[in-house]
Image 1 (cartoon, rainbow, N blue to C red):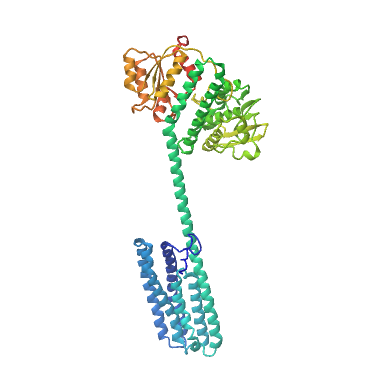
Image 2: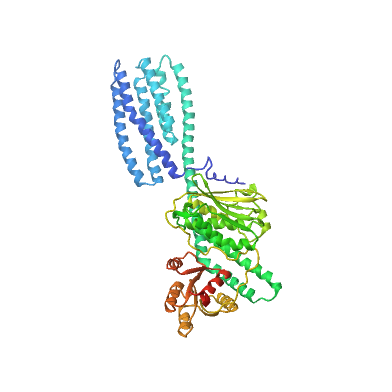
Length: 607
């Protein structure tokens, strides 16, 4: 029975075959060392010939000297040919063409080393013979150390340049051969072992280089693949944001409409839970999109002096009602009207908002303090809370995405472990230090350290759609009163339109609905005069919602208008904001929407 074939050596092992590129590299090293040895020999041969000519007939030694001069000239021509071939031939062609040439040159070089031993045999005195033997030994040793990348090349020089000269020692040292020959044989064995060890060293070096190149190529491929996957994920989140938010948007409107019409006390708690769930999903969408934009490198950082007093006031306004409904104290201690830090205004605001929101979420009693202190030549923004705290083993992971300590789940499941991850990414983009100090069950102190800046002008932060007037953290939704007036909704999703109709009808607003520009203009042309126009940006007709809103606002100068979209960072919406139009994010916060429509539609509020 035939024995099974041996498995090939594993890639990267010591017995793995060397690639053709590696063989070409070894051949190149061998060629360089062989050239050096041959170029030195004309000088060596000239010195030996002059020494021998002092008391002997040196005609054949002069011939030997001329041979090496010619040999060196021929090898210089070969070097130029080799350099030319390296530019135009691949590795396999180089090895196939030049390996036989180098083996022939090494054989000829070895014969040239042995030649003077044959020339002077029986004629040279002991001193010259010993000098010649030592010179040949030095040449062989040097080649054994440097010329063994391709072992077959050195072996030809070794056999012709040293072993072939061993029988001649009987005539070269007629009175001492019995002592010189055994030593020469031992030297031959040592050279053989040394040449094999040196060859293995060169081969291992090339193998390690190849393995390193393979690992580097794999790393680059893996990095490119990971980068492509990250970009694909970010592109998906960005393009799918609108479609992902549509059902959540519709659920939020319907939940508010049902809560408005509900007269059953037993349904109040489930409806409040439903609205809290909608807000929780909304926060997750916002955090995911913020994180994907930051990781995708789509956030441009513009460092400007940011006034801390304005920032803290903005955050206080945003979270004051949430803290009140949860029975918590939210205190703000700005360092002074001239205190400012050098940071990107949007990234800094997002970081502080996330820190305060995180502190309120995990604080059951007591309160939260937002303050800033001078530290290390800058300002350290700190958020203190009397919440559940962070265990020591969790503190190193608390800033990683989707990580929540176990005790956090005991408080509620509306968090997603993204708020602090966004803080960490924002801080790194701004070059800010960040950290925390916490004791489990006693509270935490989260901080950001930024360089101080001189406040040369007002740097108040722009108002953004960044929070909830009523948060899902606790309490019941506020009671929203009846409204009056007319509203035009432009949205091509039937479910969303149905939810809009239910909510606006529950509030007492007369609403009309259109899915494209032609339907909207048809309503206006038939005499419908809207007091408010809310237009979705992405329409299935392919039309730009902003263009439709702008045209309708020009035609209805008495109306107010806003864009409604789940894509918060599209160029069209950025253009709308730059022109002064309001952009409302999906899912809509019904409390903010009610307050906005009350201001727009109620005559008592005026313009």
